[in-house]
Image (tube, rainbow, N blue to C red; front, side, top):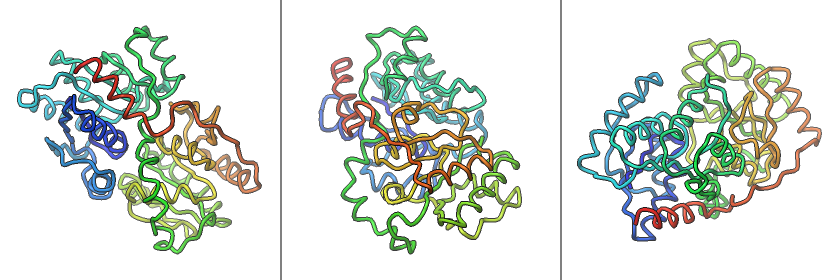
Length: 358
């Protein structure tokens, strides 16, 4: 199995697949790290905490536009195929490295497995939507996280016998590492106590790449932080855009460097609520039972809205401030956890793959 990963959202997913492959002993994982995320906070710290072994191949594609980054990743992945000689290629999620792995699999006529398949927003202005649709078009085997995602694949004409419901791979490390999460001293490091702050993340292009949008979000955060302080790990992309647009950090927002996985989960778990544009955090807060305001017009994870604690609110300043006030008044959505979001997805995926390929 050639397993392709490259960015922070991938690393939580591949950790479980690698450990379950090793435990099963029938499929040998060969890890390609494209280097889409390459600094310590967005890459190495996750490998350390999640117990991911050193990559078999590191490509160092670095940053760039969607096309530049994907093109370098395609060339790099294709270059390792003669040495790796995989029986199949597995990709996870929807980042540019996912798209690159899918394209190489098609060009090399190697079966492609997509874990976390079937998510859709139908908004082709989102690079992630392009990536996930192309990957699913090229895949031979699908592991959707939810029934909604499985139904998307069926509507698109994929054969039911190639679709395997296994649950949400993104959540496996959270269950496994919860003792470390509980023991984390990140609250003490930041001078916080439980339920005394709001946790926030911002990184998606539609949130941070447009001056008016980002300025409006930060005006809303400024208003909210006047009532409850906000903790914001600052993504490099967001930091660059703030400097470019001349945006100052509000006084009530405690900005930190990007945080490792365990510390991120602890800050979510003990927050009053979360404000984010992340995909994976929508899942995590649903399982943790923490209210979540998602700064997006669409979500590929509608179960977190229909069943969970998530509210989809867009990026309008007034709407963000109003929805935060609504939560602070106690109008909190009650959530349920979707089926198979139980921390055992990697186990189920690898047993299916062993049956197919081993």
